[in-house]
Image (cartoon, rainbow, N blue to C red):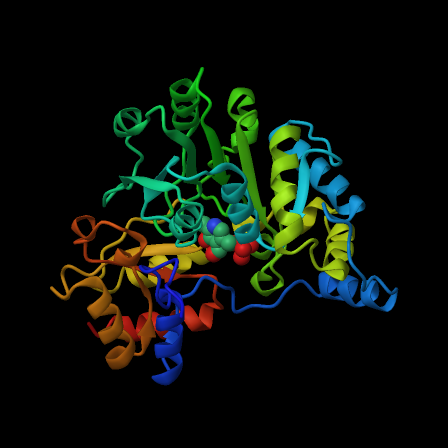
Amino acid sequence: MITTKLPKVGTTIFTVMSALAQKHNAINLSQGFPDFRVNENLVKEVTKAMNNNFNQYAPMAGFMPLREQIAQKIEKMYGISSNPDTEITVVSGASEGIFAAIAATVRENDEVIIFEPAYDLYVPAIELQGGIVRHISLSAPSFRPDFEQLKRLISPKTRLIIFNTPHNPTGTTWTTEDLETLDSLLEGSRILVISDEVYEHLIFDNQKHQSVLSYPNLKERSFAVFSFGKTFHATGWKVGYVIAPQKLTAELRKIHQYITFSTVTPIQVALAEFLKNEENYIHLADFYQEKRDYLCKLLAQTNFGFTPTQGTYFQLVDYSKISDQKDTDFAIWLTKNIGVASIPISPFYQNENNNSAKILRLCFAKNNETLEKAVEKLSKL
Ligand SMILES: Cc1ncc(COP(=O)(O)O)c(C=O)c1O
């Protein structure tokens, strides 16, 4: 018979909450996906690519015109040049990119440092490689990274550090100073970095996204991972890309070619066209900031506490004035009795002691009408 390789992994909280939302006909602010449409022109480009017979395997590393457009976008945004041939790989979602980067670098008993709450893919991917997870807890209300703790955790066994900015689920963003501190802590070490930047465009209040790519020493040791799903409201397409120096890219591709070999062709062809016009992505922060502000304006009339999120399309809310229940219990209660599905924060932590905060995550990538209906229900509490 079979002994599981991932004994701690069950059904994810996203699946549980979405199923519960459906069963109770609740407004679903749980899973992170937009309920508005993909740009019509992008959909037309996909149809055109299919009609033009771009339906067979794409090159393993990605459709070259798309990689060239990605290089131009990166240059425009972060002022650095990257070689489409040797440093850019198109992958089937950021998830595949992160998994492949972990598989390419982590060996049995290597230590990997992550910041918790963490995106749920990181820990199982590390453990499948026999790696050991060391975590730094980000604590409410600020969820800022503690670099003193990071310094203490770094050991000769540390192989990899994974961080995520703007951060899911807390919305925290790393500053220039944070990246400079990380850079100096890693100086002279052989430690590699995965920088999960899938929410690069979703950053508010005139902040500039701090990509690992803008820091030359960090860039040399990093896999920077991005997602078109987040940028173009098309999470179901699962197309992303990884930027890494040539040597790291070569190892990443060895894994990528045996996970998926290559990524869906017509969508790559369509994205190559769509990216030519920067108007298609530079206004995203304004668009989502309006949504955030609208949700916060509505929430101000409720008993939920909150600080406007700095990035991503997630807003954390504190329900300590409303209930003493544990966050998972309260999220289930809220779905069944009030009709709003959210995501509790504790499943993003491995350590039970770090999740006593009474906080839920709401996704605001939704039409205003959906947000209004949800908050109308929440205001009953
Ligand atoms: C922090 C983070 N990283 C990675 C991903 C995965 O992105 P993709 O859908 O492109 O695989 C997500 C998706 O929710 C995410 O929130």
